[in-house]
Length: 162
View 1 (cartoon, rainbow, N blue to C red):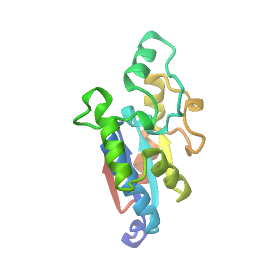
View 2: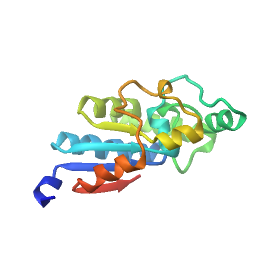
View 3: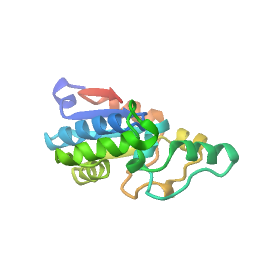
């Protein structure tokens, strides 16, 4: 593939559900899309939190329900990777960001949708953690495996892991 063809595509693996890492992922994705890049985001393990609908529970078995409970809910419930303070850190960061006019994670995710960012949850992780497609926002592109992501990444100017 010619180097010129690779210059307008970005691929990203999002495997963290931490607030700060999700901010980084969506800011890079929306910035890249606004600059004209075709952006693919592949969400796996704790990163699935970013695609989960608000107020839905996940899992069928005991372990699946426990994972859903530990994961703590949708993107608006993401805690910072440091200084969580039993939920107080999330509240503090939300307040500080609002004071600086920083978009919320749900707003950044919607901006990504509006800019045409393609968001794919990992099917294997969905199976293991007992997530169903219906538990995700309707804007996800499709549920895919790692082979699909590798193909996308092989065509990209750069690939990131967040």
